[in-house]
Amino acid sequence: MTDESKRVVVVTGGAKGIGAAIARAAADAGHGVHITYRQSDAAASALLAELSERHPGQPFDASALDLADTSAVEGFAEQLGAMDGLYGLVHNAGATYDALAPMLNQDRAERLMQVNFWSLARLVKAAIRPMMRAKSGRVIAIGSVTATRGTKGNGPYAASKAAIEGYMRSLAIEVAPKGVTANVIAPGYVDTDMMAPYEKAREAVEACIPTGRYARPEEIAALARHLLSAEAAPITGAVLPIDGGLSAAIATNR
Image (cartoon, rainbow, N blue to C red; front, side, top):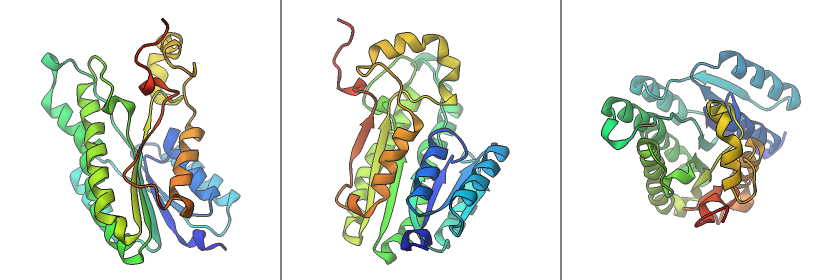
């Protein structure tokens, strides 16, 4: 068993999509993995079985967790702070809420902020102390290009992702002397179930992406795997877009 297999990486929203791809990548790198999920019991069980079969001897576990429930987040934070071998926290879970500014519902927007941002802050509070004591750790948040690129009706979601970016930059400075890194991966359009409701617009959207296609979950996970590695120790406080050039373009299809 490798030294990495004694380390545990926690992935929120890890049962499906980008989260599941990151869980697989972390396991392939030799880490133990603990995923959280809200309702995807069957997917979480199937993923744990898959990982256990592929990587016997490494620890894999899952917890049902609704990040909108502050009491549940508090309970999991206590569990996180006492977790043996905690090395990485990947905050992948997220909620969406679209509304034009005059139609914004504050209760829904605050719930969104709790899931996307405040739960991250609470889990980091619990996780960072054991990482700093060990002088080794990785915090990764899945952000979004919407944090810096506006679209109609996307204000609440974009604000939550912008909050993540600002928080993670400050965190990076605080924990760098103790060997802990903090980075944001900022995807654009990714080929997951979350995009299914917008399938009719896919061709038009892809025409606006310089590479001409959505990213794949495995491509997001490959970057996460590198950020979890020892070789990525100098990378901290960074916001790394994976969007096919979308955020670099002033205009497309001229």
